[in-house]
Length: 403
Image (cartoon, rainbow, N blue to C red; front, side):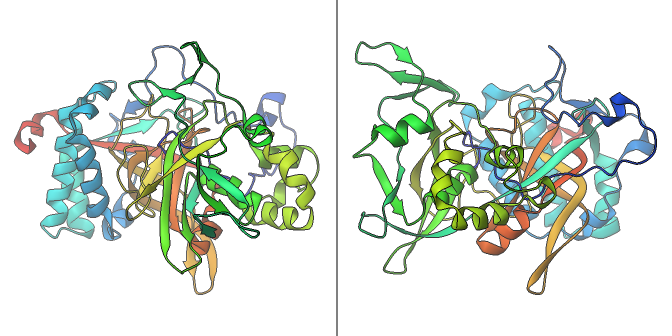
């Protein structure tokens, strides 16, 4: 989780573009979702043409858990440390707070549907992400909190460790990873995943043990987990830090080597493959040098703002270019549970920007938190869709009245 400098999550499917007819070389290029912004450019662009404002009708009817997620964002913004990240572009800290209070007030008044829609359109300005192509294209992926069998003590079954944050790992004032403090007092790059696992560097700093090495890796990638202990008790492990290395996708490595076709890639496909070929787990997970460290948390997992994340209400974005904790609106395709299965359908809805991820590092990327457990994992594994990302901010003339 996120945030917490989180790692990007294993996405479930790989986008397959149907191509037909004669196409230019430029048109055949794969979208560069991780394309960085030009120097000095802001990730959001204010919408000045009312015709470009997205249709929020359905979202105004589906508001379950929205107030709870807003309260988590307001809790973060109430902390003095949150002010250092504003202004973000033209958005001030005061405007961010007033915007969340205003939408919260509308929900508290019982507004829903058309009434809520009319109130939002009257009070709020809309900003759209420039996306990966300066035309608003954003790739949406999903992440979740798995539930695994685990133990706080090792034995013959529980042999694969998760570690707490090492004492020699040094962070900067904003939580960024600076490196490893050496015996001489200088900073050096922290060892990679391969080095950590093969040298026993962190022996004695284990926080829990799992039964399967790929479950350890999934926990790293998702950034949190619920562990079911031998006595049946559930405990939550949340993200504490990482080793500062860039994330590299194991899924893409497997596709590149022909182990799983791009059209069939999913988290389930990876799990199934490694169950049949357990001898290859180490080889592939070590291709991702990023390593994640954990801490125990009370209640549900927290995002990079150190506030709880809410299923289908929390998103992870690049916090260097998107405003923390603020109200967002998504337009894409997402899975929904239907009976015992999952179906994908067009989706529009309000979210709160409360997390980040190791591979979520550009305006063209956004990760949607799908929840806890196997069903959430099934849904998260199916999210790999283009769409549009918007943010809503109270009109400047109304800010003071909501502070």
